[in-house]
Every structure is written in C-alpha cells, then in structure tokens.
Length: 364
Ligand SMILES: [Zn+2]
Image (cartoon, rainbow, N blue to C red; front, side):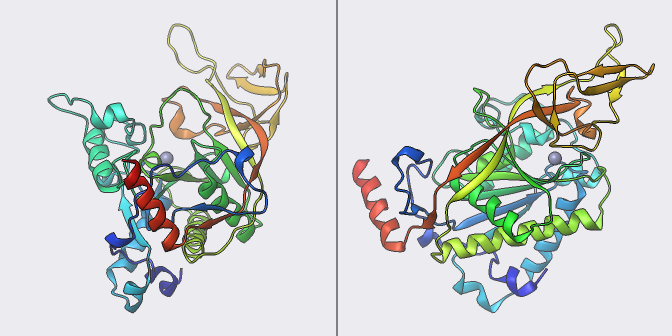
C-alpha cells in the first residue's frame, strides 16, 4: 500500500462540501439519456469499516494499517476534498477474537433497533450500533457519510464479493465495475440481497451508499496473506475510484452481472435434537457461484446418503458451508443471475451542487 496514495484521504472534515441533497438515487433507466452521463453528488465522506465481525481478520488488520497511516501528518491534507473515516466497528469482539459478544452487530442497523427503546441491560452490540449510527449516520439522514465500505471475510470460496441491498445504486455498481477491470484475475461478483420487504440491517446501510466487501475463503480467527492482499487492493482501488469520481471523471456505462438472493437453504436436521444430519456434498463444496440444477447433489448425510436439490429452477449457490451461518440455519444461499445495464455517470460540479442545494431549500 502506498502511503502517498492513502495520505490524500487523510481525515479532515470540510463542512463546506457537505451539500444537502434530497434524493441521490436512483434514476429509472427509462428516464436516462443513453449518451448523457447521470450526474450524482460527490462523495465527500467515505468510511471504511472492519471488525464488524470480530473474528474476520483481514478487515481488522487492514483497518489498523489504515489508522496507522492516518496518524501520520501529510502535506496534501488541505488539497483533498474527500475525508476518509476508518472504523474498527466491534472492538470488544475483536479483542475477544469472536464474531460478536452478545448479538450479531451486523443485524443491529434496522431503524427499529437504532431508534427503539432499550432494555435495562441492552446487548453491547446494540449500544455499539447506536454509537456507529451517531458517527456515520444517522441512517437515512442528510448528515450520513456518503459511502460505507464494510470489510468482511467468509469461509466460503467466494472470491471478492460486493454485497448490497440495491441493484440500482450506480455508485456501488460503478465501483464494482472499476474493481473488476483493475483486478481482472480475481473472481468477483455483485450480490444483491433483494428488494424484499425486509429492512436493511447491516452497517453499510447507514451510509447514503454502501456495500459489504466480502472476501474468502479465509477461516475465521485467521488472517491469510493472499486474502488480506486482495482486500487491501480492493480498498485502494475503491478509494482511487472515489478520487477520480470527485475530480470530475466520466465513467462509461456498461453491464454488470448481478446475483440476486432468492433463498437460503438449511442443513438437514434431526427433528428431535435439531442437530444437523448431513454436510454439504463434496460436489458442491468450494464451488460458490456454480449453477445448481434440479437433482444435483446437495448434501451428504453422515450415514453416506446423497441428498439432491429438489428445487425446479436452476440457481447459483453461494455462501456454501459458511462457518458462521451454522447458528443461523443456513447451509448455502441461492441466487438468480441477471445482467444489468448501468448508465455513464459523473460527479456534479460545485455549481450544480449549489444550484441543487438552493432548489431543495426552496422546496422546503
Ligand atoms: Zn462478516
């Protein structure tokens, strides 16, 4: 990692640049002129978070490195209009080397949990979620950071994945496309959690734009140099993209393949004890994002029997045998793949932002 490249993102806040805007996204494709780039507000504040799950160590160590670099003063500070906030999300879990201490922090960012009443002794993670919401949010508010990139590891063989709630957030999709281009040898997928009624619950949902960068395979509680290196490169390319975007570069439109979550599948379980009775089949293990067809081997019972996929639609399997999902009752997830058209984009100029700011004030 180059210190020079990072130092231009050193933390400072420039309130002049926090332009209020009401609706940043999305613009329906039908309303877009094919040739004219969609203009979006600049990304003045970017947060990179790690250790949201305390035993996913690539993000923990990467955030620590970024924090070290940020402590070194840089001459470029006053010239860079982007502030980088670097956050170790769940320091208590990190210290204990566990995913969480009381409850999964990355399920605590619904508006109900963030804003609801608390019990007498609330779980640590709920209190921490509220602190993070105060620091990076408030979620849904105009003061929220512009982009949250939350770093995760998976034990599954998923390569580098973006996981996001929206399939029409052009910022996240363009960053993904840029990373694909910069890291052509890395298997990379965009996972869309689906437009279900379920409210967004994870830390990245606190920003105006956000995604989880999920990289594997890496056992929890372990840091591997290859996986760490991928994450470091991914974060640096993301920050490069933000700098280019803010400086007025036009990003061409194109295609992105998106995997939309359809459903999760649990392990077969004993009715009485609820213990699992099978493991993921060896034909499927480590083959994340392969197409699972009806009647393909799915599980192998501990007595040696092959259980097959009983669905009628071929779907793509991912998070196959993820270590931390046993407790959630998820053996794997299934997705439908679609090719999305994304428009060309560029950042609004300062004049455009100001004009837009005046318009929103008048509207109020
Ligand atoms: Zn995680």
